[in-house]
Amino acid sequence: VGAEIGDHAHYLIKEIQEQPRTIERALKGRIDERFETAHLGGLNLSVREAREVKRVKILGCGSACYAGELGAQLIEDLARVPASAEAASEFRYRNPVVEPDTLYVAVSQSGETIDTLAAVQELQRKGGRVIGIVNVVGSTIARQVDGGIYLHAGPEMSVAATKSFTSTVAAFALLALHLGRMRDLSPEQGRRIIAGLTALPGQITEIIERSEMIAGVAAEIAQSRSVMFVGRRRGWPVAREGAQKLKEISYVHAEAYPSAELKHGPLALISPEMPTVAIVPDDDLLDKNTSTLSEIKARKGPVIAVAHRELPAELADRTLVIPKNEPELDPILMSIPLQILAYHAAVVLERDVDKPRNLAKSVTVE
Ligand code: G6P
Image (cartoon, rainbow, N blue to C red; front, side):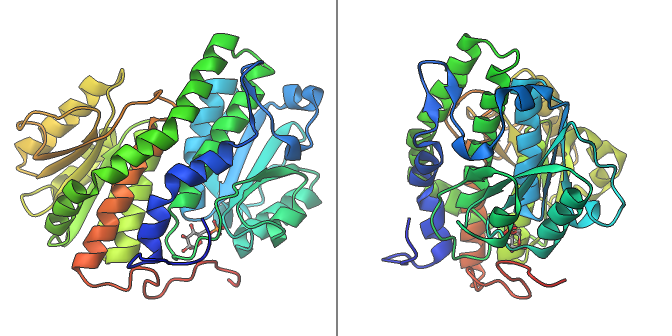
């Protein structure tokens, strides 16, 4: 997971392919099989303090914020603590109410993003307790926060976030497990999540091995002017991150929408010229998701589904089938085909994959 590009054409594909190892590194030494929990030594949070947390507020920019949205759902699901994520750049300018029993989490790969750092400083000025989920050891945000979790994902050289995104979500799963086991999460549920986490690296490898099929779909996507991404619940942040990846590296316009909101506007855009990438996990919302697909197909919109099994032709033109984990952890796996899709679309269009125009790896000035 070092900074050498090796035989890879781009850092981006190297970093995508590193994910089985970077997830392992995020988990290493942090799983306690005996007590079905996670050890997070750097948090600096006593059991008592952790139990007193009434709310969790997550802040970050770009992909860090989308990973935070998945983090918020993990914390609500496993720890049953109300949690939400917001762009740090918005939070810092709206005179937020800072509460003593809220745990604030700043997410940043680089640890240098100015808006995230400013949000942390504003919180601390008002007495808020902030922990960090950061990749770069010793970075400004890592030093500023009161404790935290390092990703240990190694240097991320490509401007677009990939391995840091999935590692951040894995770190949130550990945090949610840790908080959950101090509250109401049962040992059985803890064991279920641990088994899911440990299965991730092998499952990511399986997805990477199927890249060729995804590259075929990417060549089709690359010809579109605009692509819609939809998902619901945990699929919604996955869709947002998928759209972000596509637009930032291939410059194909992409828009993400929560599936059920399609009919409140963007359905008007659906036509044979506008493909939709849909996140369709095999869970309790499967029927809701397939009815969204029928609505799109009725308007002759091409559909590419990310799903746990092949969908029939009346619902999807292509299915990117991925292995199934636990529902809470499936978003980690579902985001990987979208990274591969964006990468190959950018390659087909001969974009500057690792250094997209107008963008910087970390935005340290406003
Ligand atoms: C820039 C990068 C994004 C990244 C965001 C936040 O916009 O291009 O890929 O998600 O900054 O960066 P951070 O280092 O704070 O995670």
